[in-house]
Length: 368
Image (cartoon, rainbow, N blue to C red; front, side, top):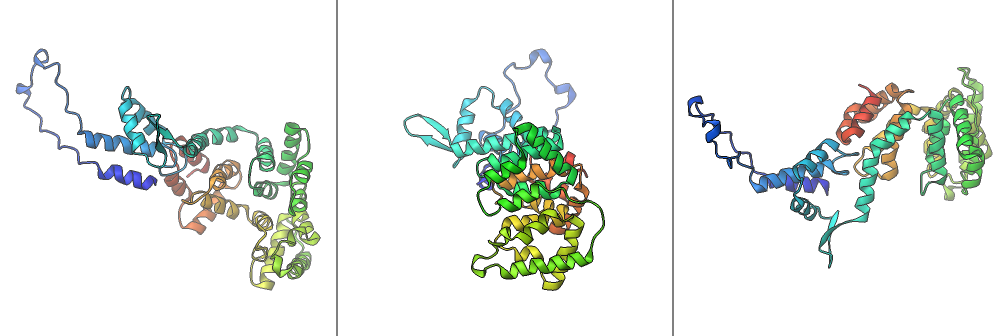
């Protein structure tokens, strides 16, 4: 739709008239003799309407990226001052977003488009506010929204629990208590009604060892334990029982990240494929493995999904979350991972797919 509208506006434009050669200085009319009605000839109506329509189309959310091109929008507001007929023409040429209202004599804005606009205008505001918050409060608020927000993905809980340091996760739990007067663990246990509850409680309650010591013997033992759990899972239910397997939950919720990486490596060597592939059908387990194994690679994937044309509301929101939360952590590693995954620079991809102040804020946090 946005591309079609832009294409229509461009096709209606005619090339601008060539500038007239300057007159000799001696032939220029004197100031007092100039016709007071004389003005520079305006652009042809078709050309002006097409250009203005194109500018405003690009200014609004959803017309070529995330966020809003505030500068183009303000320019259009100035050009169309006291010209309501121009705005009416714009609404009539915006099929799908505005529609004629029978009997009212107006071009009615569709409710879905209004909600879409609200989301896009809010992106810069949300990024700025989240950036200003203490990281522990920020994580606590994300966790609360994941538990209490309408249809918000529970994967945010896994992300917070598995990509933060032990001290940062503990700080987020303290902030959660201060903000909501109950613990994060009890909220997860009460709010999550499906089979993932046990795993999620274990992940958010973890305080992992963060030293470098790794036991290869233990890694081999637990790789075999994970393989046994996968083998015992009913084929008809895919991996649906794995998330409730005590061994699986214990290993993922308690072991240090270096120890888990050693376990994942041995598992792949023994079975010829990553553990997450054997967790197919259970996204909570898959996301936990990806977050614990390599946060930079995980966040590069999150950003890549957010920038896709078919990204849904939650995937787009994850762009702000990923950039804001990792700007001071491992952004350089994320940029390297993104380049390997997508063959392009992260900053270039964000600049291409975002607009206005939102784009500027993201690029400032990403860095060059």
